[in-house]
Length: 144
Image (cartoon, rainbow, N blue to C red; front, side, top):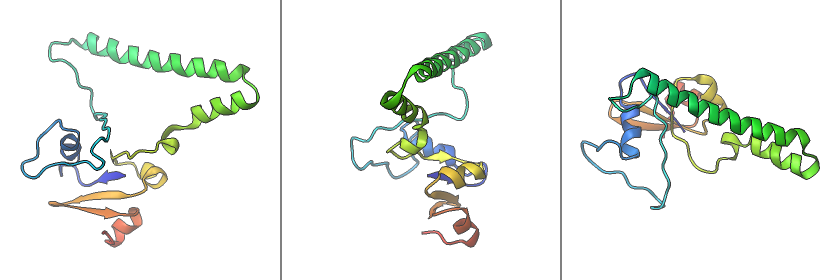
């Protein structure tokens, strides 16, 4: 689901409230089912105040190196695999969002992303969130 709206309208604040990093001014957040797992990927780097620039960069680079190691290991496995094993590895590699069975709520400014991946859009309009099927519905004002 793409969360859209003008800059400063509260999209990121809403996400932070949903994941419990901020408290709402009023109301509450409830999940159904109650045992739902929630993750949050911040739009900006978050680091300890006493961390130096070098510390932050080393941490970021190490994260990239680990991701690179995992991709390279999978590529090595795929280069020698055959038959069902190759098919399994290719499915694993190509999984991504298409295979994800949960819901992703993303603050989105990229039209390609919205048109390609979003199965719905929540538009922050003043103090209301309206649900739309796609960008065309937003243009036509056909929200639910």
